[in-house]
Image (tube, rainbow, N blue to C red; front, side, top):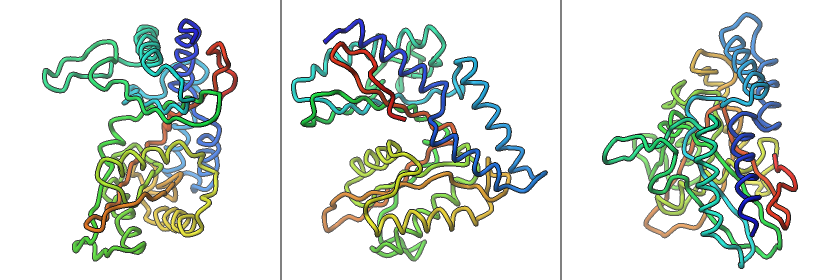
Length: 294
C-alpha cells in the first residue's frame, strides 16, 4: 500500500465531500425548487440552499459549519491492511482540519474538551466489509449533529401510534419520526430506514441506506412501494423546507430490512439534512483515485 498516495486521495475525498454535493442530491433540490409556489417561503428557503450549494463548491468551503461525524465504509479485499488505512485516514483528517475542509468538530465526551484535530475515541468511525473484488472502494459520509438529533428508533408494537408488527405499523413509525422532526433536522431531509435487527445493527443499517443514490430503485417490490408511499405522504404534511411549510419535506426515503429475533421488532430511522455530504472513490493499485462514485 502506498501510504503517501492514500493520504492524498483521502484528503481529496474529504475536501470534495465537505464542499460539493453529489449530483443526485443537487438534482433533487433543483426539482423541488420548481415544485414550490412562486413567492412562497419554501421556494425562498430552497433558493438559499441552492445558493449555498453553489458557493461552497466554487470556494471549496464546507457546505455547513457542522462537518459532523466522519464515517468511512470500506469495501476491500481480504488482504487489505486495515490498520494502515486507519492511520492514513487519521493523518488526512488532521490535514483536512488544518486546511479548513473540516471544522474542529470532535469533542471528548467526558471532559467536554474539543480535541482540535477531529481525532478521538471512535472518531473517525470505520466500517470495513471484505469482498471478492480486487479493487478497494471507499465511501465517506459527514453526518451532521442537527439531523442526527432527530433520528428515532421504535419498538413494535407501539400503542401510542396504534402500530402493530407489520408494514402498516412501520409506515406509522416513519411518518411519526418525520412529524416529530419538523424543521429541526435542517430539512428537507432524507430518511435512511432499517426494519428489524437489534438496536445497534438497525441504526447502522439505516445509515448505510444513505449510501444509495436518491434516484435508484429498490429491488424489493414491497420496500419500493413503501418508499414511494412515505415520500408521497410525508410531502403532503406541509412541514416543508426548514419547517417553513411547503411541498418539500423529504428529498428521499431509502428502506432496507435485516433479520430480527422473535422478541424484538425495531424500526430504526436515520435522518439526513439537505446538506447530504457523502462521496466515494475507487482506488487504483497505487492508492490514487481512479474514479468518484457519486
